[in-house]
Image 1 (cartoon, rainbow, N blue to C red):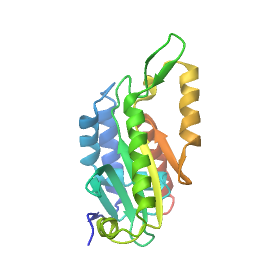
Image 2: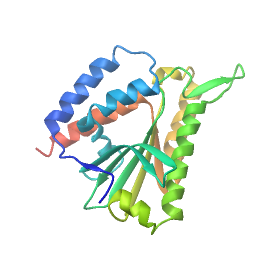
Image 3: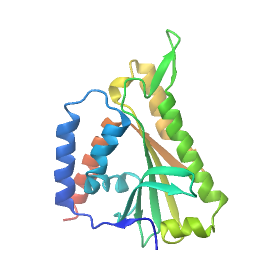
Image 4: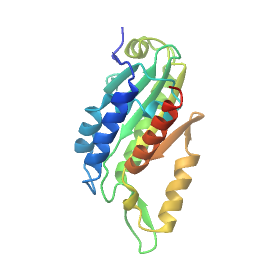
Length: 206
């Protein structure tokens, strides 16, 4: 027993869902969390493309809004049952000040929403490491977790207004790890690009 739904990945459906998302996304500049998560949630095949981004084998398990230990909520979890590998993904707003908020004239502070997303993944990692043999956790995931990957998706590229902010973001994107696991950070623009790359890669195996 687990809290997950099974899913059979279909490349054609994933491509169609991604294309429809791109059409919708192109009409938007900045987007609230509820709206953009609703669009992603309505496209589960597209969401599975994040599996390869997180180095999770082809997902056959999916769950939006998974609550762990009755306390911590995960926006999206993708899993491969055979490998017992899971990617935990936190979605934050795609608003103008999601990545950086007010500060000095030369230096803006990291946005509260982005910091909240990282706080979430740190708590997820803690739950897993603090309760490696927890019966409730194993029941939610349908067994033990052999591999974990984490991602925070937040903001838009246009939310960075200087070269320094872009470099700060790149630095944070590549150097953050939690418990030895890389915690990816990407904007929603990055997400679309990475999904497109995943799609192209998947097509090479046809």
